[in-house]
Image (cartoon, rainbow, N blue to C red):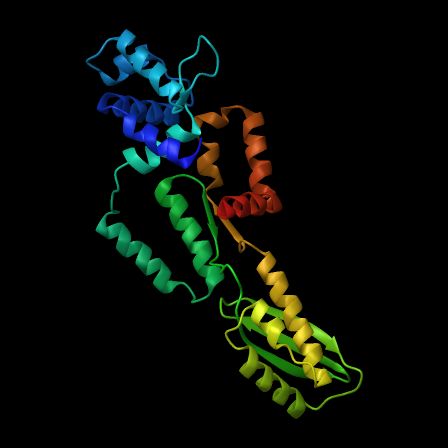
Length: 280
């Protein structure tokens, strides 16, 4: 369904249909069982008949917000139903002030390192939502060069350390044709930092050194690393709260639990799913 059609269908929902969709989504989240009209009447004391509810559920199904697993079953939310529930029917609620202070204190005590903050963020989210949390580190659409350092190690080997504006760090060992002094290495790094500072991959390629042999070799490594960083659409994944998910009624069946575990443990698949989500 296109975004335009989905928006039009949202506008067509009556107050009664919105209320029923809200109840059906919440009930299905709680029980993981298809929701029937009789259950809605009895569970939520609705002042309407089962026949009226069935008609409204049929209309919501026709609009794509519900689906029916099989003919004799009740209804379950569709992807559009969940989306409408999250964007239109859920009310925003602020965390209690005491909880906000606790979270702020946790981040204050954490070391100022992105890995520490992402791990803590995943933990806090899973605790507060009682669900699984999936956090990715901030990652720019295109990496921008910050600076490079060249360090003489032994003989003809040189360690190159490159840092991007987003905090990505890469290290490589370069084997030169002949030994080069640290003074010359530092001079080459200073010149490249001045030319490449703040530039993205395309700009670096257009400005790449072409005269000095050492700077040409370093530029090629910089371009290689920048290209590799750009290919990583998402950063490292941080997961927490797996036990929260496995406690849900959907996972009473061991096969479902095993499939969920395999998905969460397969980081490359999660990276691919996130990349496609971000791109679309």
